[in-house]
Length: 315
Image (cartoon, helix red, strand yellow):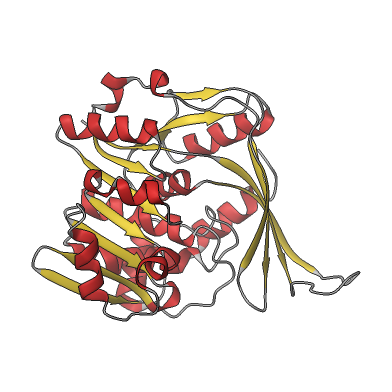
C-alpha cells in the first residue's frame, strides 16, 4: 500500500534574503542571498517527508509552462509520484522576501491562470491505495478525497494554517488536525490553556490535535495525553515553510508509529533545522541528521549545502 497522498497548490518561489526590510519611500536594502525553490503547503510537507525517507503522491494542478515542469521535477527529486498532477495555464509564482532583522517574511504572489482541479479529475482507485491523505483546504475535492480515504481505512491529516468557516465545518473528517499559531489565536485568543483548548478541537472530530507555536515549540493533545514539546535553539535564517515542514515531519512520524508526543518533538527538530537555511526545501534534513541533532545538538550540514547550491538556479 502507498503511504501518503496530498492535494493542494504547488508554486515556484523566488526567495530573496535581505539585510533589513525597507519601510520608507525610496529606501534600499542589501541582498544577502537568493534562491529558486518551490512552495505550497502540502507540497512542501510532501517533499519534507520524502527527504526523511517516506513516499508520497501529489495531486493538483500546475501550469503548462517552464515553471510547471520545474515544480514536477523537484517533486521527483524527493521521490514523489507526480503521475496524477494535471497541467493547464500558467503556474503560481511567489517572490518571498525575508530579512536578517526580524527573520519574518513578506510574500508577493501571482495566482495560476489554469482551471481548478475538480472532483471529476480524481482517480478514485489511485487515491484509495494510500494510508494517509494530507489536505490544506476544505473545498469539494477535499471532502471527496477524505471520504475515499476513510472508506479505504486510511486517515486524514490537515494543514490548519489560516482559519476559515469551511475548515471548521470539515473538522469531523480530520483525524489529525495540525494548526498554526494564527489559527489558535483566532479560536482562543491569548489563552494559554493549551490542554483544555486542544480538547475542544478534539471534540469537533480529530483524534489528535496539534498547534505549532513558533520558536516556543508545539502542543499536542490525544486520547489520554497532552504534551508541550519545547522548541530548539538554532540560528534562524528563514522561517519560510517551517510549518509545512513540521506537518510533513509529523506525518512521517505517524508512519513510523511514534507516539503523538514523540512525533511533536521530532517535528520540532525537523522544522528547526529547516529554519537554518533559506527557503522551504533546502534546509529540510534527512532522518540521520535529525537523530543526531536530537541527541547531540549537532548534525552534518553537507546535504543542506548541496541543496542550497542546487537551488541557486531554477531547474
